[in-house]
Length: 296
Image (cartoon, rainbow, N blue to C red; front, side, top):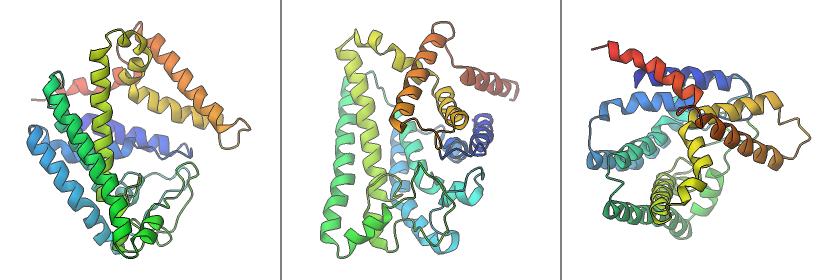
């Protein structure tokens, strides 16, 4: 895990230095892997409780630290993320994104082949989604000044047009505590974390149920499965493609670029998986982590 984390930190930094308008998550993932390493041997229930507790405490702690670390900052092109960015102010700050990783660890320890388990997970997903989005919707209408604070909190600098932003010009959660009621993506608020986790659980359980209910679906879904089997390669591919094509100055409509990336990565992954089970970067990662077998 440590080897994987170091590789992701290096790879994420390299992708950031390309200067694309994308905010790469890989360096953040590397840090996440290191932070959750002490939890590696825990079961599903303890992990779920820790994820819930972190989701409740993390955003509040980040808000309390705002005067010290500054507000949300999307770095200028080619500027690598430093420790403060990785932990607090970057695109995916560890203090508010690690709960997703811990929740995923808890989910992975469940018997996902059991229909009863999947049903309970689906109900949990519904409850979290309703609590997150519904709670935010209700609070915005009941708490005085919350609507304006949430609006400001949701005004995250465009992920498609990254620019250097002063720490004072963009505030995490907006300018007041009421902004922590936001449920929008990247608002870094508790309700947002709860809602997004619920949607993720629903997505996973729905896919598993569909594959069981329609056995022939697996054949049709092979291209999607192929991309999923080499997600690291696909992720790096799309950022490198954006860099090489210089999409910001391209006259090609963004939708065409998006569809082109989807089609090309799907075709390449499908062809690759016919001959090799693992993607190229996944294979290299496996070779690198093979060193761990010699450490006892």
